[in-house]
Length: 146
Image 1 (cartoon, rainbow, N blue to C red):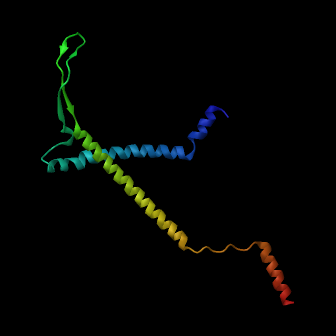
Image 2 (image 1 turned 90 degrees about the vertical axis):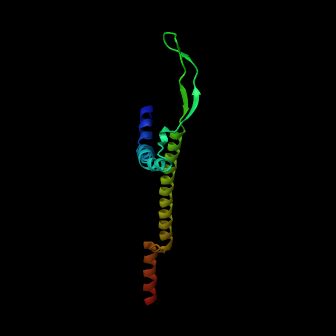
Image 3 (image 1 turned 180 degrees about the vertical axis):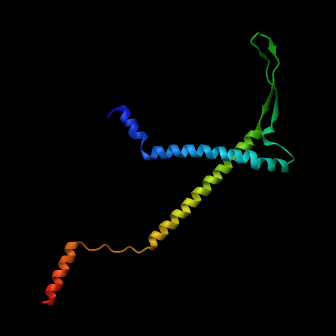
């Protein structure tokens, strides 16, 4: 089997296609959650704590070292910031995604347990006896009548 054929067989397996769909949906879901956090959740929280925009929260670490430009001139260092507001927003993103995934798994596990319980409650009907057994019974019953 050629390398190309092996790759085709691998790529066309159901699991690979399902995984690709999951990754694409997950990326889109991540964008939705990021927008939800940045545009819907964080502004009211920022307003509650004094009109703060979380992405603007930072801590100055001072002036960075002097550098040289292309002409060889000394350029003064720029101020260095620790942008902890972006980090807080990313943490909120993660928590919302984690909560959504947890809720989805919880619902799936509950439904699975319900279906398994229903399947266990249904009594198993005995399998019909094979045809040769039925024929032997007919012969036995016919012999009893004689």
